[in-house]
Amino acid sequence: MKQNRVPVIAIVGRPNVGKSTLFNRIIGRQDAIVHGTPGVTRDRHYELTDWNGCQFMLVDTGGYIPQSHDSVDAAVREQAELAIDEADAVLFVIDAGSGLTIAEQQITDHLKRSDKRCVLVINKADNPRTTQTVMADEQIYRLGLSDPVCISAISGQNVGDLLDRVLTLVGEGFLKSVDEIVYESNLLQLAVIGKPNVGKSSFVNAVTGENKLIVSDTPGTTRDSIHTDITFDGQRFRLIDTAGLRRRAKVKENIEFYSTLRTLKTIQECDVAVLLIDAVEGLADQDIRVLEEARQLKKGLLIAVNKWDLIEKDDKTYLNYERRLKQAIEPTTYVPVVFISSLTRQRVTRVLELAKRVYGERNKTISTSRLNRFLAEAIARNHPPAVRGKDIRINYITQIKSRPPVFALFSNEPALLPPNYRQYLEHRMRETFGFAGVPLSLTFRKKSKDRVA
Ligand code: GDP
Ligand code: GDP
Image 1 (cartoon, rainbow, N blue to C red):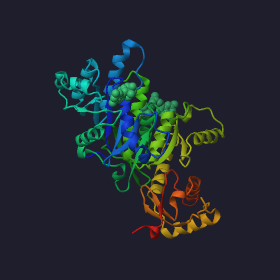
Image 2: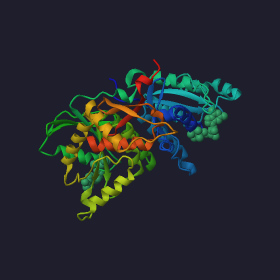
Image 3: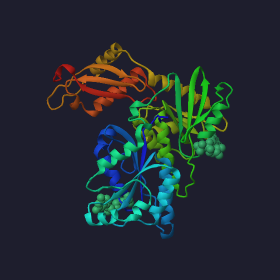
Image 4: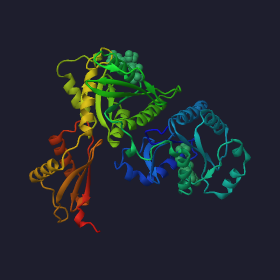
């Protein structure tokens, strides 16, 4: 069965074999095109990228190796095993200069046990002599993996062939792009996301325990998530709860990193994601990353501050909390926030009401005539500035798609339009049409009659 998401490809291997160099080499090319937000992605070791029209999530497993000598082997192993379990295909990197060690054998054993698709990569093949020695080393073939691909991550040599090879291995089992995600009609797929222990399963239990709704008796599960189908207030919902990691991890950062990766897989399938945060602990860095990803993927969003029962409060507490939260999640401030307790069930069905509203907003279509009336008013109120002596006109707006909404605006000089004017238009659109919890895509195009035929 085809997965409703793009594949996850992990780069695995011992420290210093060149994993990060390879990661940067692969994402470096398309970084700006796919993400368009400089600076946010550098330190996080995963990236949605593409090769030859196929998107995939690339994961660099370097980092989080404790320095103390005797635990290094165990830590490398934990890293590699978690990554292999979470990935759909693996780039297993070894170093042409230093050949095989016990770590490579252990990684191979785990790859075989987990039956994961894998390409063996010999990196640093820029030195022909050492590469020849490695290639002649029969131990490499005794691993029983695929024929190795020799690359140089530093120069980029053969990296394209490597990507061709791994994407062929992944085959037809995944989407080629997140834009191909299949949404079932009238089924609101609600991803329940958040850090481990924030209360995701308690929330799902609290919701399904409510007698106002109908729980279907055939919950489904996938490798990454648990699905529960319910009907509430006339709307069919599928609650998607990210399953916890199956493998126990000793390093705390590993648990966070691989839980986040799982969450990203889940988010791809949903219409709306509800991010649970712990009222006492507040917003964590990984929450901000997950929000950013959901925004990039154009998902509907809302935030539920859970464990609200643990907070001592007066009538202003939630307002102050919400204000600070919105400051911390700039520019995703259009997200509705609700304060809940999965323990006492306080306001848990409010989450469903809000999710339904966001779903409706994400699916809605605004007529071209209304949009153009809006545009005329917005421009009359605040005209685009002249840039380099050129008068910028925006002549026409139309919605080219919904679920998620995308608008095209036609201008004589789209490239010159300053970012703050784009923000102004988005802001006015939200004031006029709503779109609570929904990321808006405004694409600016050259007015067609100016186009060269
Ligand atoms: P990681 O720990 O596996 O992520 O390894 P890094 O990417 O940090 O690389 C370790 C060292 O190997 C760095 O000094 C890199 O510059 C170097 N290196 C990485 N790839 C190549 C390569 O293709 N050729 C050569 N000569 N050096 C490389
Ligand atoms: P998950 O890992 O996100 O699925 O979190 P769980 O649902 O397993 O909950 C983690 C812990 O938080 C459990 O001990 C829950 O009983 C507790 N918990 C969950 N929701 C609430 C809540 O609203 N209030 C309080 N006080 N505890 C909660």
